[in-house]
Amino acid sequence: MSHDLNPELPWLDALKWDADGLIPAIAQDAASGRVLMLAWMNRASLAETLRGGLAVYWSRSRKRLWKKGEESGHFQKVHALRTDCDGDALLLAVTQQGGMACHTGRESCFFYEQAGERWLAADPILKDPKEIYAK
Image (cartoon, rainbow, N blue to C red; front, side):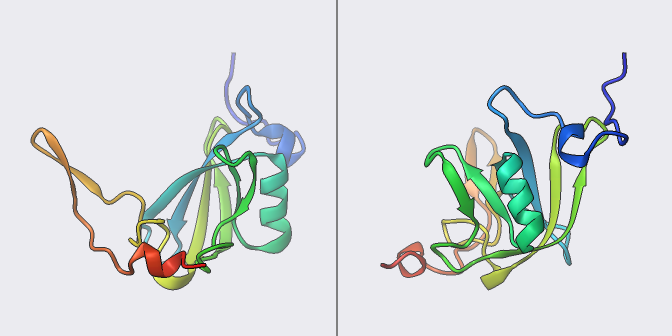
């Protein structure tokens, strides 16, 4: 039995959604190739992303659609969308507005590096989160 994506199905139906109707989505800088973040998408967020050209995710904590950058101004312009051979993960090639994808003020959410028995922050804070999210 094959677990490969079936390209004959309509594009949303071809994807393999989890029990909650979600699929993991990796945002990657279109120019550098650096992985910026991992988030989740549902059918509505994926359709809205393609319709508007900016990344929209499903916030599991807020239980609602979340346009990346809606609070920080650090939107993600989507250049390309891919899925893997199984159709159970997405890869978005993006331009990250403001140069920061992480709510901690760093370029990437993947800034911790394993060092011995600990995780150490390996990337600098580019902007204090209190300045980014000031209301």
